[in-house]
Amino acid sequence: MSRRQRQGMIDRQGSKLSLVRQCSLLDISRGSVYYRPTPARAGDLDLMALMDRQYMKTPFYGSRRMRVWLRGQGHPLGRDKARRLMRLAGLEAVYRRPNTSKPTPEHRVYPYLLRGMKIDGVNQVWTADITYIPMAKGFLYLVAIMDWYGRYVLAWRLSNTLEVGFCVEALAEALGKGKPEVFNTDQGSQFTSAAFTGALLERGIQVSMDGKGRYLDNILVERLWRSIKYEEVYLKAYKDGTEANQGIGFYLDFYNRERPHQALGYRTPQETFQGEQPRKRPEGQEEILIPRVETTPLAAEDFLKLAPLLFK
Image (cartoon, rainbow, N blue to C red):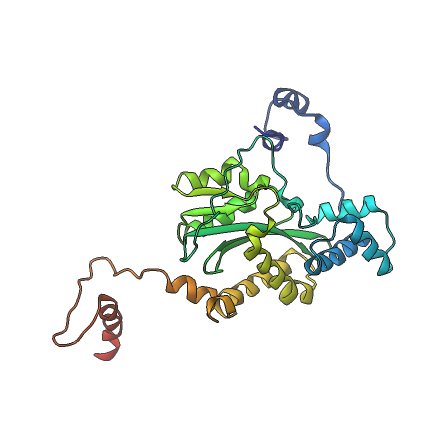
């Protein structure tokens, strides 16, 4: 069991055991229980927002180059601070995995299954990733689950921490809309956790994870991040989490339903995803065949829906 999971078992109010005794039994330090993270300063938040913007343009910038760029923008700072703020924002040069994908030693890492695979239909492969969302005061993390072929965003969640809960909630919503053959992610601790992989394995879904240096494997989600930040986040400068939740919700609805994609033949993700889904005949409805008229059960289904309106 990981340290974070053991920390989550601490009962501050209802337990008869003191915090000291609980920490001893769970083999965790008392300091980790009493510690409360201090919020980032306003100046640091401004620098993180600038870094995030520049990272979208130059994802190959590490802390050295980012520090030089910031100095050129009139923000002199040391490399240690540049590295710390990049880490806090989950930004790291593309030749290595983003810091939001830091693996946990206790978690199992699954093999990469997409090598040589031809992805030519919906619900064949799903993918997920996490990104940083700047706000006027503070920041959030956004997770999205996407159908690889259709570019359709099946579910998303915002969180102010990188705990696994918001990723599991998004996964539960996505699985209510379908089931992929393979689910591919990076090796982030959220995606390697037993709560996340267990939900996939119990449904017979194969788990695939990018290897080191394979940052391009999640390029479709990276393109989603670029779109949502340049077309929504950077334009709005959210005041708080409520505003961010509303704005991102409206944008992703637009992205799925209205925004055409060149790679999809200028169809929307929703048209592609739902167009590939087999339509089912309502339970108990028989197939209707009309003499000398070529028809299908689906056409008959549509006719029956209109019949009450036609013969009022």
